[in-house]
Image (cartoon, rainbow, N blue to C red):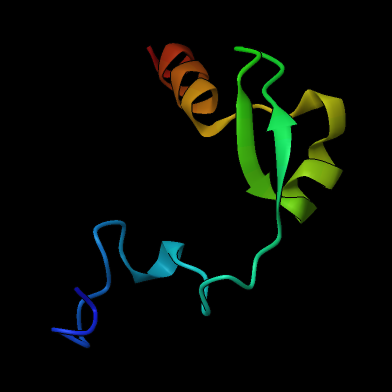
Length: 67
């Protein structure tokens, strides 16, 4: 899609994409809430450690707290 339209920023928007594809090293982390394996940037996995919560569970918790 980007080759056909250089201005295309992607379906998630330009701010969520890494500046260069393939530069982020991904590692497997297990969500402490749902126990699913997720591929996350290495820095995120190291900072969170055993307390990593995936984006899906974080959204559910945020919407549950807002209600």
